[in-house]
Length: 192
Image (cartoon, rainbow, N blue to C red; front, side, top):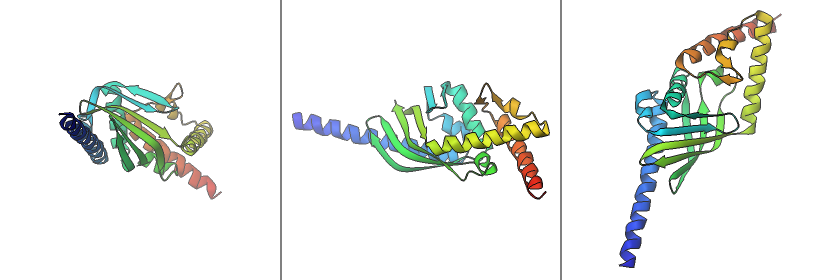
């Protein structure tokens, strides 16, 4: 009897681990297809996403804004070194998008990223960006603010409030237009 119970528990654990792995891989695929509704269907109602040291977003409304932002910026995620432990999936996430590309950042890495699964849905994401990511982005934002002061282009004030990015499809599109102007200005003044 004890052996049967241990086997059943082991099979259940393996099954849960496989389901969690499949859930996270499905999320990666849907995110990269910019299937916002599909990605949203994988989130628990009490979803929380923490970008360690930067922000915490809670609830499906805030997560939808992130998904819409990522879709508008052509975000692409690549999950590597995936392993499952209990109700958590650990991996290294390599992220590329048009915002990073526009500011000269090839990719950013979140390592580790942890997906916590509850009742077959993603309940929490904890992404740990590398120190270099924060420094790179901070440097670029500083340069954009300096440019905006020189050119009197105040668009950035509509995109960052109280030191935080505003995440939405609309703000992502405004960012891309702003970054084009910033790059054009830098290109023109580089030749002078």
